[in-house]
Image (tube, rainbow, N blue to C red):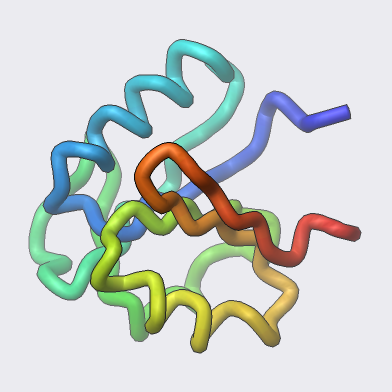
Length: 103
């Protein structure tokens, strides 16, 4: 039973895939709330929310699901988030890997 009113952040917001993901989530889960973009170039907004640097992830609430879109960020995301309680999803083409969802 997947929650439909989840909060989420998108890592890798400079990629077109990030915008497609946000549009898809908004269409499929209208109750979901985008709270932040995450990117090493963190000086702009993403779909109306502020973007933070990956070093600032700890400012996010622990219940925020992080979708990692950028292939170049997946190693860093796995390293930083794997041993945390944060739920995150690595998007790899048309495949996904989910982490910390077994709560």
